[in-house]
Length: 127
Image 1 (cartoon, one colour):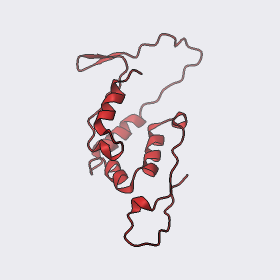
Image 2 (tube, rainbow, N blue to C red):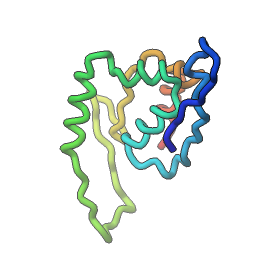
Image 3 (tube, helix red, strand yellow):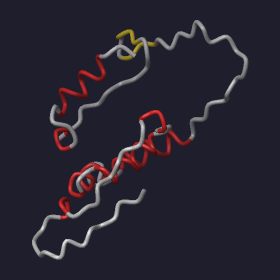
Image 4 (cartoon, rainbow, N blue to C red):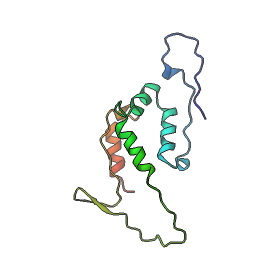
């Protein structure tokens, strides 16, 4: 499903208007952060993707995160009772039901009209 440039034949047309439409896959088929990244690279406007994928230009934190997360593996345990799993923990003295933290994001309105408000609402929603 690679995104293809459409030959507009008209000079001065922004690249955002010359991209073939991209149909996002069903959310159930997205299995990893890498899948989300691939979808974003195809569905965001080119300037938006350039801004977001630059990761504050130096890529230092993104590189460290990628390296750290690549060291984490999960060992599947088959036929275990998972009916009462507690993922709770504390972060900076606050109890969390699930250890997910949402960092501030600049310019989130580039990808959603509600921007940072949508991120906060998504984080606040029960899982």
